[in-house]
Image (cartoon, rainbow, N blue to C red; front, side, top):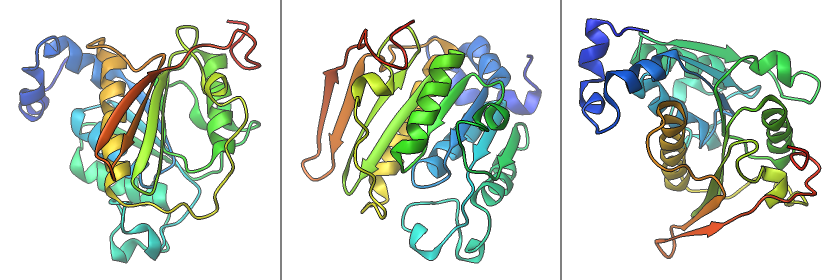
Length: 245
């Protein structure tokens, strides 16, 4: 896909990055990325995916904005309370970058509908706040061979990893048993913004081929201690999801 004059100007500063160039930007223009959950992670993730020039972004969320979302879900203004998260996000993102396509999907993901809702994408980004949906997405990505960029946050800390089916562990390898669900997760706005930015960098690397991915590694960060740690995570050959790959 060739770049228009306005795209060349818009993306000029990032095109200058070593290894990026026109080819990298054209790959981003041709890419399709799905963001699952338009909350504390999904809002900043979708903003930066839009700003960087991903050609098509699919936003999936069945909820509406509430007042208690405003400390972290930065696509929501006070006037948007009570409106569909996916639809509001689509409107804001299209206003930021008219050169890309944004699709809003207002639905709850289940094992029965995930294929129809997501369709053909190159990367899926985890913006969820519950493990049930994360594991559905993990299984879908493994089955379809789609990279899955996971992140989770709570309070002032979080973790993330990138799953490339067949090249590293999947989410079920790492969490054999699902962590307990928390109905109302305590969270500051900055940690999801941090991890959302890191997720976007992983998406860019997946699409362009630049850099080393967070495959087989889990990154942990604590805002309280301002400490970052990366630990190795390995595939489970008996994993019920990816063990047969």
